[in-house]
Length: 137
Image (cartoon, rainbow, N blue to C red):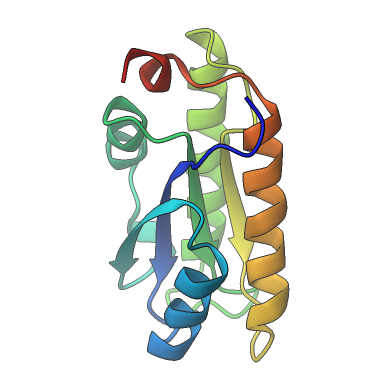
């Protein structure tokens, strides 16, 4: 099942991406179904939200955070990364495998790098077997 259109949920910190950056993300990832969810801080994303994304058929979830040390809310980006790791572990426990969720740090003024990392993530997901919820669609 290579090169299939993926359903990707993109949670992002509103301090790390602006409207122009999001537009570029959508343009670059137009081959996939992208659901974009803005947050005041990536640390506001909670485990139930991330799990719900997979329950509703997401093939993968990306959380775009601020760079380490640049979070306006002190440790929001670190909390988001820890929650992504927790959900990755839960997915492994239920047999969906690991690597379906990623926390990516947005480098200021380097949206191309962020989009490149998201594309690599999508390519990895495309190579993996479909998520259990995706198989039921």
